[in-house]
Amino acid sequence: MISVKPDRSDYFILSGYLFGWFLIWCAYFTSLVSQNFIHYGMIFMGLLVPIFMYAWYYKRLRFTFVFLIWLIIGIFQFMLMFFLKKNPDFDGFNGSYAFTLAYLPCMLFSYTLMRWVYKLLYREELIITAHRFPWMDDEGREWNRMDYILSILGASLFLILPTLLLA
Image 1: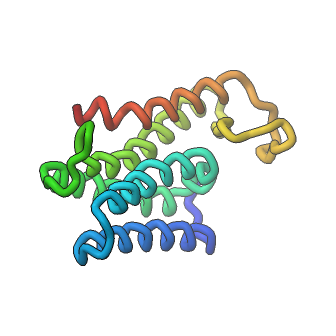
Image 2: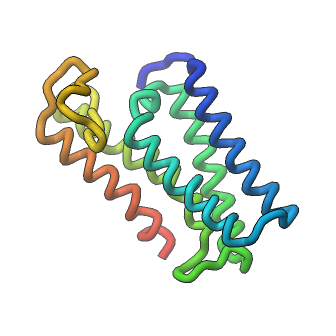
C-alpha cells in the first residue's frame, strides 16, 4: 500500500459517513422517527455505502492511512454488530438489521484480497470495472479479463461473506 495523507475528499466522505450513522443513532435513542426509518437508514449506511465505496472509492483505499481509517471504523462496526444483533429493536423479517454493520469490514477484506491476488498475477493495480466504460480509462493501461473477474468476484464475496459468517 502507498502511504499518503488523506485529502479533502477523504475527510468529506468520512465525515458524511460518520454523520449519517450519528443521525441514525440519535434518531434511535430519542425515538424521533419510526423504527422502519431506522432500519432503512441502517440498510443504506451499512450496505449501499460500502457498495458505492467499492465501485467508486477503491483508488483511495490503496493509500495506507485512508485504508487504516476505514479499517478501524469497520472493526468497530463489526464489534457493534455482535452487541446489537440480539437487540429486538433491530429484528427484521430475515434476521437482524444489525448485520448490515458487517458489510464495511467484509468489503475492505474482499477488496484487499482481490487487489493482492491481482498484484501477484500482474504486478499492477486492480481496476474495479463494475462502473467503468471504455471512455473512462484513467489508469493508463488496458483492462484485461482478470480486472473483470476479480472485480465481480470481490463484489460477490463482500456481499455474500456477511451471510456466510453470521448465519
